[in-house]
Image 1 (tube, rainbow, N blue to C red):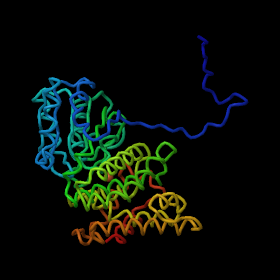
Image 2 (cartoon, rainbow, N blue to C red):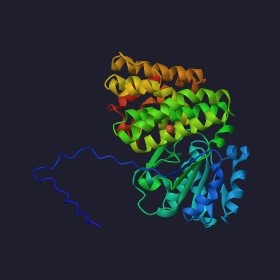
Image 3 (cartoon, protein in one colour):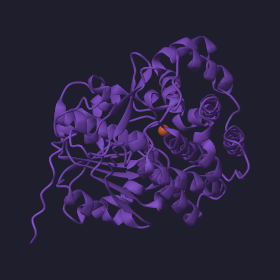
Image 4 (tube, rainbow, N blue to C red):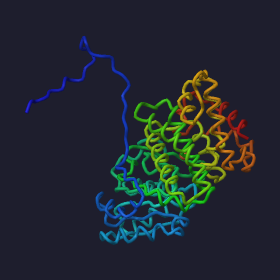
Length: 401
Ligand SMILES: [Fe+2]
């Protein structure tokens, strides 16, 4: 066989091309399809787990999905320890409690069956298992440096994207805001999506999580870190959400619409874990952490206002977003296309019953200064297409009020 020798990396060769932008794309093994919950036992075995902690929540338990999964674990002689002591917007104290249960049961892997909260707690337990300390010690990017146990994630909401992402978000209960923890170690080993799990979501949860996925798709599409590997996923996700989210809210048992939404949510997740997000999420994390409000609902209210803010300086980034949203962009200048995209998002939210402003959620404008200070510390603020100041955050919050 011919031996191939790579040229040494150097920039001083006379004909060396200029170094261009480098793209990387990090994702788990993805299993997707109706009925794939039956593969959960094999997935755990494949990553080396024999005694996983199964993280779920009361809603998913009540819907019967854990009962449906457990025989598939038993079939391959996997013994699990069930833990479900979490609330929406998972909190540092809940992570600590889950970690103690993990140690006590001598678990060796994490399996989450649930929404983003369950998946994020499972990731947080994995960090502590490999690295020790308290979960808030790991705020930021790549702070957990030691190996962590294998993770298999089974999403039940069609929204969070956490099953494929390199992030988890935990509420700091003392400082009352959400902390974003990121790093390549947090990419799950296997993401297993069975769209049937989405059929037991209420219309309200369907709308909130679906609009969270739309926020992921739009924010990642216009992100400073978006590249060709992310763009296609983001735009396909937008098209799918606009077409199928209203159908899912109208008829929760329409399995083909649920499958399309699960696919869109997955693609939005693939885009945002690599391109990251923007000011919508950076601000929503602060309000959600302070007032314990639904993440997707806050994103839905903030998103159009962040789009208008960004479009003042970067309208061109929204032209393909507008096209994916169904706006007839031919002949429109970028500003008109961006405004068309924003109005389309507002119309969709309104049709799904999203409140018009933050005032309807009990948010107090006196807290805007604090939200502004904290939002600038959020990991996602750096990839917003337009630089953001504290004044800008206050302005966006006031517009969304
Ligand atoms: Fe989100």
